[in-house]
Image 1 (cartoon, rainbow, N blue to C red):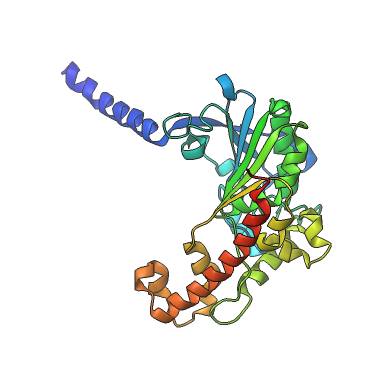
Image 2: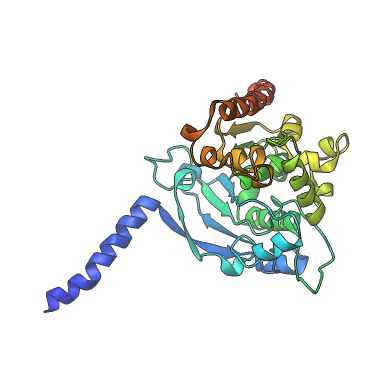
Length: 330
């Protein structure tokens, strides 16, 4: 009887241990409570947050900062919906997250960064950490303060040892990958002179192209993001001094101006961009692209040709950028 009772809990325990082995180390959340007084808060007014796994051994003075992704909100309605989720409120975030991939502590799967100080910065503002609107409408209680959140989190990490970093990498995925580009040079400026600093954007190179109906859908969307969040003043000034500010949300106009070595990782056929930039629902009222968006093997020859055109444009601008950064990244 006792052995049977023991099996009741031992199997779930084994399962949890195996799961942790597969997914990686679970890291506790850190809330930046001091940021609230500075107005550096999530959409709902809650404090910003991150997860930190301290470095050790030869990596104790090296830092990897990974910016979480999760799209954007472009108006009051979408931001109100967002503020009730983990992407708009630290109250909704998990208290522990598994660190895997580039954040893993296993040298076998993450040989370059396993012993660095590894940080995942949570995303809760909806503007790729660029917004800053002082006024808060009491009827919505929405706080558009992404830029302040970025500053507050960086200040907190600098106080915890990043101010003596010898090597540092700012990375991010999707909307976080866009963040890693928009804040790349600023991140570099925060660190000691002589520190080796680079940036990595994973799936964050969103391109400004017309959709299948010939409309500037993504350009209008990013314009609304920049307007809603008051982001214009926080976008790279070398870009905004020459172009309409919302265009500077697109990497094709800002990446070439980045002085810090930058690495770009992006799928040739980015499914998100095909679904949301090239063939968004509003541009396809009859659903002729529905099957194609479910899998490239379902696409017609004309659809493939249209995607190839967008890919060729993407390749042309990234090749120019790659030539520019080649020397700096060597």
